[in-house]
Image 1 (spheres, rainbow, N blue to C red):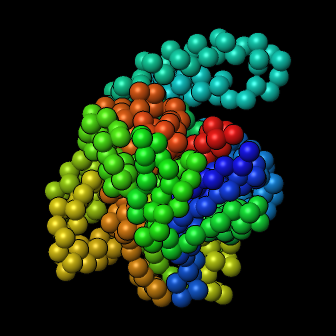
Image 2: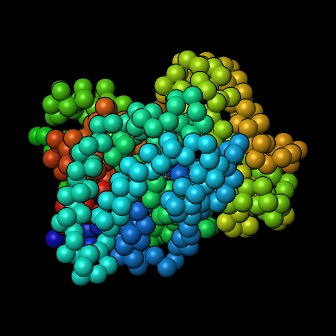
Image 3: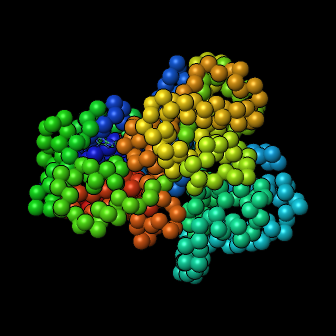
Length: 492
Ligand SMILES: Cc1cc2nc3c(=O)[nH]c(=O)nc-3n(C[C@H](O)[C@H](O)[C@H](O)COP(=O)(O)OP(=O)(O)OC[C@H]3O[C@@H](n4cnc5c(N)ncnc54)[C@H](O)[C@@H]3O)c2cc1C
């Protein structure tokens, strides 16, 4: 029996849920506040240059590809591997595997061999145990699985409450380059138990879309409409309507749309603290938990159009994605009052047009520079004063360009277009609280969910499900897709 389903948000989670449910014959309406679909998996063009809006990449390709295959779309989306060039004062190489990173570290810091040996002795064990959890390839793998699972669980339990900063400090002097490099391998303060996953994802299972993330969102949006779904762009949901503790529909543009089930494929905090028409339908302690729980770090992005050919740019970048680890002493992601934070932080560089020259005008190239931002930096970017906000934004943009110049000599002379986004820009365009990039805080001391690896779609409101990356403690493209799959299964 077809049901009436409303989905809030056309990010990768909402688009996937929409496709799965419309494919089953349900009557699905997908509301998107923005004028185009995609959320954090979107992109935009300025002066002919294409830039990614949010994420540059995703991992867990088995999960992502399986779902895209199920939708019959996998072969229409040009997925490509995203190798990473790691650069610092002493490192400069493209890493395609965990062992590449190990070799690079030993070659660059031979005097720290003893500390590296101790670090990799433990990390290797974690990586091997995680690899044992991957899809079995033979009958022997299946027989060995229970043993591997026990080993994985033992290590996971041992490190799940240790954050990556504490873990790194066990092996390297906090004043050393290696400490600064390794504590940044993943999200700030994430649990050390997921470090092997971060290494394997970042170095061996990192993917993007050659023609840009927007093309992926557009394919999903088009297919959703072909399947009979209704996509309402430029249509913010203002309220989730409840009756008797159940979700009954939504209000958008002042009009009510009834539904048998509502999937919020958007920000968790806003879903409960702003959209729900009657907050008394959820327990007070639940609301308090939502309000006080911390979110993941935001990002500052600089967008540059360059009068520089992709061939020239490639000579200095080596790969489309560069991790430039030149963090200086004193760069503290927890210090929201440090006005000089960006002078000291590391940066990432990404050029969409190095994957596909069509993403920039002929003979030119596009570049993005990103840095992780302390929570609500400098009174949340100037305490609401527009002039101060613009001043800070401009200052950080110039600082990051100057840093990127160490990777791309003469960069400033090639700038043809420039713009920037703060976490407030990200919040304005996607609704994610404080521009959170990946749902809840990754710090094991700030857990919203008991199990940091679980996908949680159910809510205290009947018929209201979570279909976004916020269903997981550690949000990302794969968790948004897994949430969508779970929502579609539950609805039937
Ligand atoms: C800079 C950056 C780097 C990242 N790096 C990675 C990475 O390496 N790997 C990875 O897996 N993930 C990464 N992520 C995270 C990943 O992009 C997100 O977790 C994922 O794309 C979220 O998808 P989603 O569908 O859950 O939500 P979103 O993409 O946030 O989409 C939510 C949608 O809902 C819409 N919306 C919100 N409120 C309303 C409303 N009231 N009415 C109607 N529409 C509404 C928004 O406009 C938006 O389109 C990164 C993110 C950023 C920003």
